[in-house]
Image 1: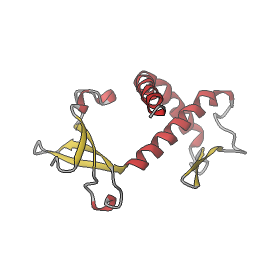
Image 2: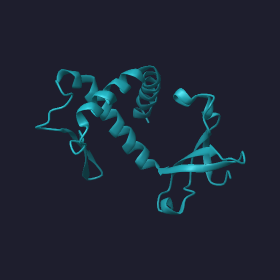
Image 3: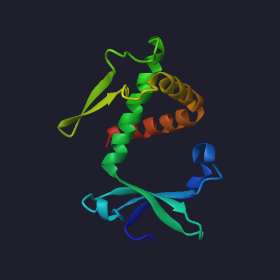
Image 4: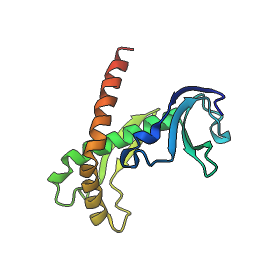
Length: 154
């Protein structure tokens, strides 16, 4: 179970956002990939859940670069919504592109999903949800910012 794991964050169920103390996600780990589809990657992050028998098993595993890509995507989305209130629909239907982020010789295009037939109400609900989650995301963003600033000296 702990083979190839290098770092562990245990007791995650105690801090799992609104699921704190009720979560079945018990720990996060970083190490060599455990799942066959990620074997080409050198490092992966695993999310461990407690199954019905009470033992832990890998529920999700993502290569490290995908974790960074998700953080980049989320961070850019958070920045977008800081200013989106200035637009009546929270986006410009004529130009839904938020930003094209250069990554690995290509681009990660971040856009408002205008293919969603309910984008008008969904974007309003999403914006409100971001506001409602401020207490959970704010502390985590401050912690992440501090750590990233330390890494810049690396």
